[in-house]
Structure formats: C-alpha cells, structure tokens
Length: 147
Image (tube, helix red, strand yellow):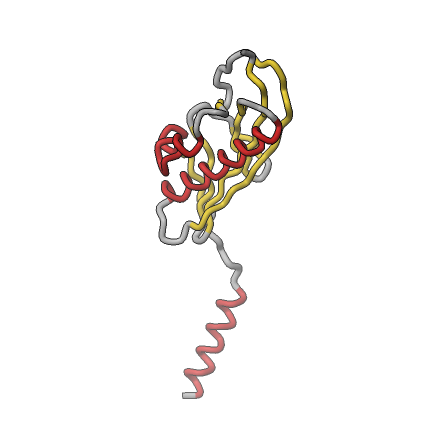
C-alpha cells in the first residue's frame, strides 16, 4: 500500500511539473461560407458594406480611421467551422458598430490580425481554435463611399 501511494505521488509530481500544452489550431476559413452561416447577411444588413483584403471598392469620398477587433466565442463541444463562423460574425458586427459611430458606410481593407500579424485575403479569414475558446482578430479602415 505504501509503495502504491509513493508511486502515485511521484507520478502526480512529474505530471504537474510538465508544461501545459493549450491547443491553438490555426484555420483558414472561407469568408463566403461564414457570411452564409448564422443568418450573418440578415444580421449585418446592407447599411455598411464590407470589403476584404484588396477587393476593389467604389470611389472613396472620405477616410475616417482604422481600428482592430478581437472577438472570441466558446468552442467547447463545437466544430472549428461553427465556432470560427460565430467569432467572425461577432468581429464583423463590432466593425459595423464602429463604422456607424464614425459615420462610415463602408469597411475596407479588412485583414486578419492575429497577434498583430496581418494576413490579407479577399476570400479567407484566419481563425484560432482552442479547446475552450475560438478567436478571430480583424483590422480594417472605415470610409465614406462617394455617392
């Protein structure tokens, strides 16, 4: 009995001394699919337009500033697709809110910005999925489009 307790204590001390390895899986997700999930298009409406990466935009009348957002969602028991799409929609809703605060009618040059490392794409966004949380970080510019 004493040997079993000593062995258990030894194993417990070795395991507790090991560094914890948190999962942080990088996923490149399609923007089009995310905009079709979670009723995203209806929730975003059309009062503020979104342009990703280097997508062409209408003529810009006024540049109103830039901002970043990092949105997270619970990923426990969810697929990366589901949780990444939720975090992406949350990030777009936050950019939309900021656009309205500034009087902008478009958000342009939207890029992924995980740990302040930009990744620009017209068709994909970067998502990081962990065991408990999923996050999407975006950076963008707010503008008024010429009439």
